[in-house]
Each structure stands twice: as structure tokens, then as C-alpha cells.
Amino acid sequence: MGAYVYFMANKSNTTLYLGVTGNIEKRVWEHKEGVDKSSFTYRCNCKKLVYVENFSNIKDAIAREKQLKNWKREWKNDLIEEVNPGWEGFV
Image 1 (cartoon, rainbow, N blue to C red):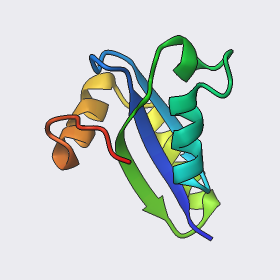
Image 2: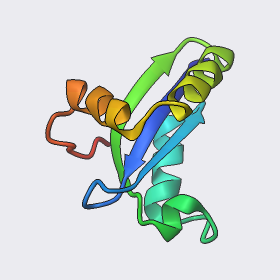
Image 3: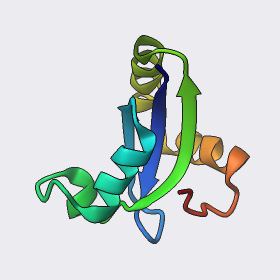
Image 4: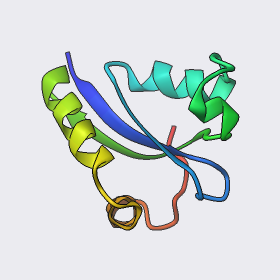
């Protein structure tokens, strides 16, 4: 079973959420639908999937998530723009 590291952004791309999941389609749906009203993504309106990395196992995905959480915002922006220069929403 695979795993994913992903970024969700708000409409103006000023707020980013970094997450890890084993089911990207379901998790993005949960963010977009606001399933957890107390979550960061709900409060900050992060409903746009702007970046995804696929891993063969959850351990590698969690390690990558921890690495990315320590990155500066500028580095995260650069990473997203490498594959998604217009910050278009996927899915």
C-alpha cells in the first residue's frame, strides 16, 4: 500500500497545510468538505491540493513530512512551483 505527502493551500495561496495519508483521494475530499470543523484546514480554508509526493510505504512518507515541516516557506513554495507553477488545484 502506498502513502502520500501533500500540501493543501487556501484560495490565495497564503496558507499551506502539509499532511501525510494512505488514501489521498479520501483525505482531500475530507479537507474540501470540511469534515473536521476544528481542523487547521477548515479554519484556514485550505481546500486546494497543490502538491503530492507518492511513497511505497508510510514510514518513508512520514520521514519526508517531518523533513518538509522543517523547511522555510520559501523552499516549500519553490518545491510546489517546480511541478505546479500556477498553483492549480489537483483532484
